[in-house]
Image (cartoon, rainbow, N blue to C red; front, side, top):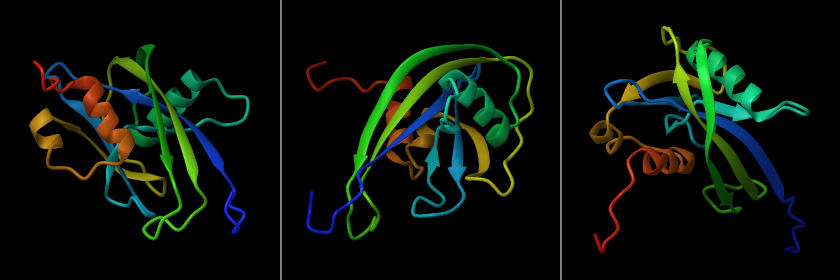
Length: 152
């Protein structure tokens, strides 16, 4: 630990990986803070005692208006550290994200108001290439559309 006595934090979240029949990916735009206007998967922090699947269902309702989730399958684990830096002058954080592949029933997208996100939208692979993404968003894109390795 440095002489500044940093608090090393761990943040646990659960996130929904949603694709529509046209193979578009659902993303949410962050409303404030250092990542304002960057895109991520819908989801968020796991509350004390809450099962991660319950978290993703709650967060999907809050951030997208989607409540009809027919199935949720554990798909991937995201792990990323954010060290203190000039651009991020906060305590270091280790972000662990539990990602569920969600099958949706009937829904109508609704943006969150006065929350951590302010807009949700479906994107094609080519549209996403033009978006500013947080590391979780970049990870999700790689899960949905894996890049060919250089040897392929």
